[in-house]
Length: 76
Length: 358
Ligand code: SF4
Image 1 (tube, each protein chain N blue to C red):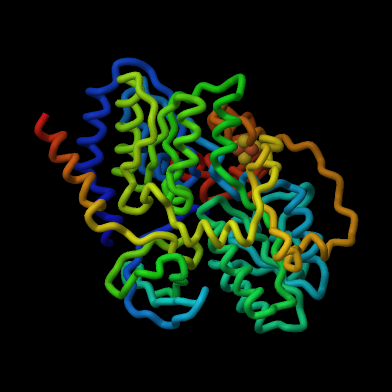
Image 2: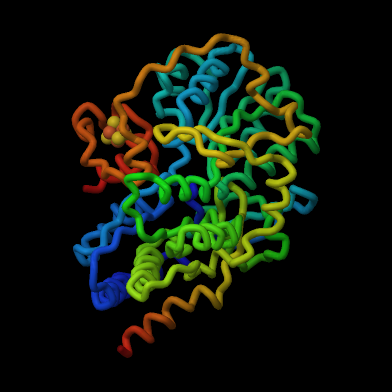
């Protein structure tokens, strides 16, 4: 139920209070997603989508952090 | 797939597992709170990568599992009315209520529909103005914003044939119940990353301040889970207890302020009954006064069947006291085709995870 997966915003479909929606691609599968909670997200950005609603925008810098940490582990 | 595949990398998981082995000097018991994490752990056989001294127990974070049988009975009673279209997420249809499941009443002709999103329920309501559309809304803090959004839209559009049967749960009070439990063995928690993406880490800082147990905000892919375990055991080995957030790419420390504000508008915190566990103070949501017109409970007029005692020990499973295979019914009388309890049904239930992947 808390399954939420990252998808890439392809195009904004509608604007409006509670009604900002986009076409989001999940490895090629497109779905309409509500973007009310990520108002700053734009085409090209990745959002985390749960039951048709984006709850978060992926932070690309933070996404790299684990691999930096792993490199540090490798040096031990 | 970007932001998924790289967190499943075998080489990275093995390096993390190796690091965990070098850090651990004594036995530790950790709980992953969310059922999505449980499934990833069992499916990817992550326990086999860990030293024997690190034990994972599975937590209560499966909304389908903890939704009370009475709520299902209410949904079933509503579904049996000819003027009602009852909709919910797929897993809810198969969960046994006191006597039967929604799927069973669907087979006898009730209009029960499976949805992907609460927004779909609104579309059904708009397309069927002469019917009453009841959405059985289950979920944790991750799902609260989506349910709130559907309700706010229904109000904006003045829909008068859309109703919600609400079964929403809050995680931190359940963690308190587990830590305070007499049989508790859990020494550190992998906190649910998508719940925190909404709420932020502040509620978990309060739990750390109260109980001095490490809380590590953890994602769902193998690399995320092993990193969560590594942070957690490293804290325990050093005698520390704090909130650590290695899942910042998705869950920033503040959470999602817009989602929080809509949830606070639409709902109020209330006591909640957890199936198998019992009532937990302030662990649920109810509709706020300005949204009461959407409350499906008001549609109920029939008397509901009396609850029959259940043979399912889901309460012990969901609090990490027992593992699924310790249930005498596991794999015998209780199987996914004829579940005795909800954890054997849900795609996040611990019993289903063990049955399907082990
Ligand atoms: S195996 Fe079945 S009866 Fe036993 S705890 Fe799991 S769901 Fe309940």
